[in-house]
Amino acid sequence: MAGTSPRIHEPSIYMDTEQVLHAVQLGLTTWWALINAGDAPRPRQVSKASSRWLRREINEWCESRPVADLPPPPNAGKGGTAEARARRAARAGAANCNTTTEAA
Image (cartoon, rainbow, N blue to C red):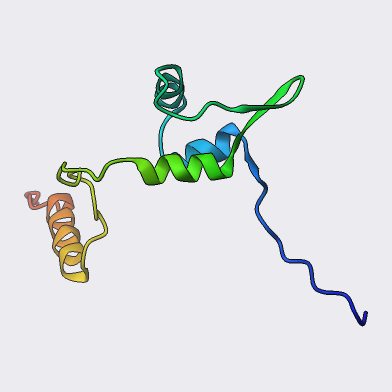
């Protein structure tokens, strides 16, 4: 096909609720609470029965969030280094060992 350029897949300009929740890493209730408080972008009406968020507005909202001063949660980096995984595996193995012996 001479003279035609390949089509480049671009993400949709709109995001549905599931895509937004995945992007912002929040639950539905928290997300709607932020919207109702005026702290998050409102969806756009794209048809009579359908509303979506503009991808650009979601990206801008995410980028506008302040940098956290909070320490990471206790489960952050749960995978850890190979050494840390080995220590956890050893502790788990020791906890699962049956150290009692039965008398014959």
